[in-house]
Length: 81
Image 1 (cartoon, rainbow, N blue to C red):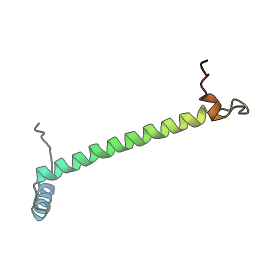
Image 2 (image 1 turned 135 degrees about the vertical axis):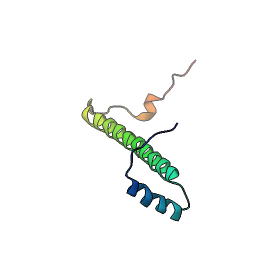
Image 3 (image 1 turned 180 degrees about the vertical axis):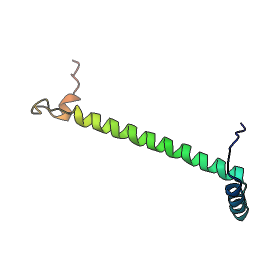
């Protein structure tokens, strides 16, 4: 997809010089930057989702009472005679 940008001539000249020094193009630099922005957005969104999940676990945590069973008892199977 082609996108049209309005940039000051002086800015374009400066950035094109930087692109030449980096052995790339202005277009490639813009593409790389936008890819970084998109990747950071995904990371930040996942971080917010994990934090919301952690907070919901804390908010809804409650105790039911004293534990009166052992783990092994939960997995016992009745013997068939």
